[in-house]
Image (cartoon, rainbow, N blue to C red):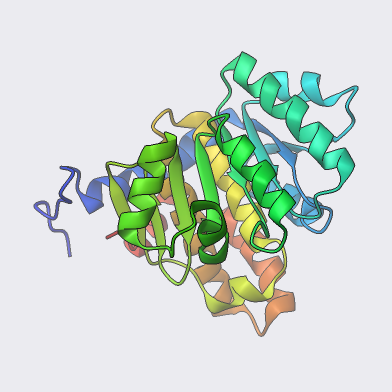
Length: 265
């Protein structure tokens, strides 16, 4: 049911955010942005296929001789700290510096910073370089922020660091330090297929490439991936078929389905 008066304390309506998602998805498919991904070895193939299914062009090189040119010519950048070896650390520094010079919005996915203090320290250094969005789970947030994750803590962290936080969980939270919404889309099998979260961060990067408002881009990226997960879950017998079905669901996703299924509160 449509509630035109259902506005947050920040003056935008949930319906408005849901309605903007099909427009951003349409722009994504029309423009086919190239998204450069510094991502982990486990996630590369699945992430590339998810980006292709969403209508984007992935690139993945880590070579220090090439990555600067690749990032300079891209429309979006994802930095994912999973399997964070020396090659990826070096590539990340070049990629982020290039993105800053090119004024290219980028997304940081600080995978497993809760497992290794040196990785967390590097992630904090990267956050100081102002990614547009930091996409992380509750354990990763606690490791970086030093506080248990909550709506108020996420808002405070986003405001203090001048970033947008996309906090994933049973319900996702998106906040830029002023605006904040919860997103309830997704399916349990998404946690059973490796790289689903990493690929979701790449989709968020793609939305950021075509939508200047990082808040709307992040909400759309999470809704798109969450709705695709729901559609895939309805057709799957388990994780194996789900991994295929979510790629099909992204490829076939349409605006009316997004609006009908979006759970933005």
